[in-house]
Amino acid sequence: MGIILREERQDKIVELIKEKRNLKITEISQILNVSDMTVHRDIKPLLDEGFIMKTFGGITLVREEPGKAQNINECNMCHCQINPRFAFKLILKEDKIEDTCCAHCGIIRHFQLGEKVVQSLSYDFLIGTTVSSYLAWFVFDSSIKVGCCMPQILTFGNKEYADKFVQAFGGEVLDFQETLDKICNKQVRGKR
Image 1 (tube, one colour):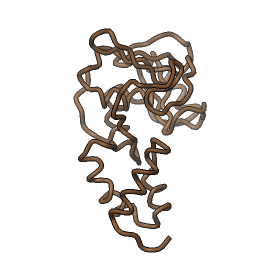
Image 2: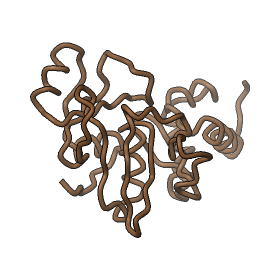
Image 3: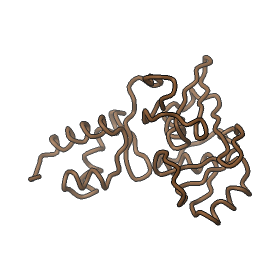
């Protein structure tokens, strides 16, 4: 690929993000054959428009019509099939519910919806019980890959279990707000 103008790169980024929904900055820079810094400059107008948002090391498409999954077993963020073991539920005002496939998608969607979220629930990775996300502990990017979105985030209802899991399989234990800040790359006040 030869030298292309900024507008052409932005058009290509829009095309890629619509197709893949989530992209790493390094992936975009390799495709466009430009530096990461150039990609950051190119995505700034898209961020300002609210078309995309930053995530940990990348960007994600901000859906224009939230909650419009194709079917009830499809994630509202990445459109993957929802495995009930990793599902993340967002309870919204006016008794609306949005489902995502994992804590990664759920936390990004929580950030996008902001004050519209009344409660969020997920399932403890080890025990399988329902836990309030605001009281949960999250293992960020462990060595065990369970097939959900990256960076992988696993939910634990008990910090001691999360710490032991990290000792065995790596990763980092974070509370809800720390996870939100890390994955959304912003400093936001949470409900914890």
